[in-house]
Amino acid sequence: MSDEDRATGSATGSATGSATGSATGSATGSATGSATGSEGSPTWAIARGMATVFRQIFRRDVTEEYPKEIEPPPPRSHIGRHLLNRHDNGLEKCIGCELCAFACPADAIWVEGEDNDPEHPVSPGERFAKDYQINYLRCIMCGLCVEACPTRALTLTSAYEMSFTSREEAILTKEQLLEPPPPLGTAPGTEEG
Image 1: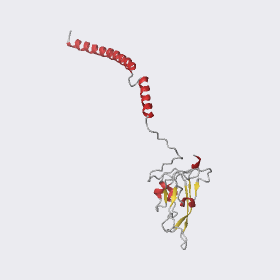
Image 2: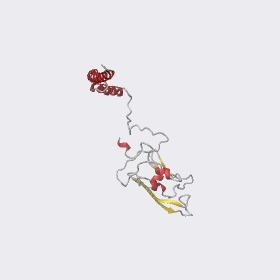
Image 3: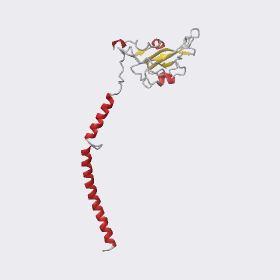
């Protein structure tokens, strides 16, 4: 037998042997793995699910008893109703520039500016907001209006308790926005909980 025939025979034999061996080994391995509970079997999946259930049983509850017990939000959280601010001398900070309305992606703010009366100014600038409205049915509380305000006249508060019984109630006017929001737990509708 020549060297060439020996090389061909050993290549053929090893190919046939490895194909047969791997087919037999994989069939045996998968059958054995299914029976003993490998990670792909249904038994293993059920065991992992039950482990998750038992882990959750012994954890502390995180359910809040709102509105019976009201947890105040963190001090720097600004997640609630808007507030129009005033200067220390009582003049409004809003100058009616309408930048907040332009920045609002939901088109929830309406501002109508007007020139200030020099004898009785409403704001320290040349203009003031004659009409200012925020529609809370549209507002997404993104805070872009606060970012756009050049005089820091508009800020977000942490008063998140807002409920409305009509569409008209959801539109807050300038007079309402100049008043600070009520403390948590005293807003209308919270007594029903």
